[in-house]
Length: 159
Image 1 (spheres, helix red, strand yellow):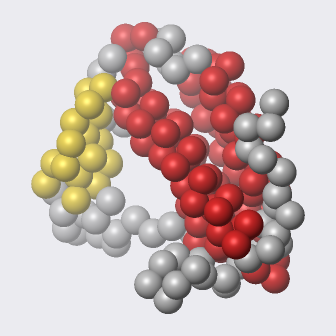
Image 2 (cartoon, one colour):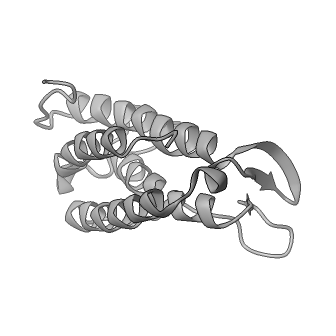
């Protein structure tokens, strides 16, 4: 499999550590008024893994369809609920990855906005880039935010 379960498990465990460190009293903290809050970043980090089964089971996603509402990041305010949602999404994603064939992961998947294709790549590449790599990217932002706002956080790659 292009995406190894070991890699997935490792990155999700590291991501959970960061999400578990989010203090409720710092959810609204922002580095700057033009940037997203700790809470938005925590919700986004937690939601990304949930895209896995949709990528595997569908051929496209339009995040701003012409005939419907645009996709929106959740706005959960309780960090414990964010972690619980993440845990559930990880379990679902892991099962989807275990059940996905190499043939399925080689199929094309398209991201659209307003009906217009933004990019097309294989489902396996999409999961690596838009689930794993995207999670690591936003986890790093969240880790920095947590450190800057004084939250206790052990290093993500401490072992």
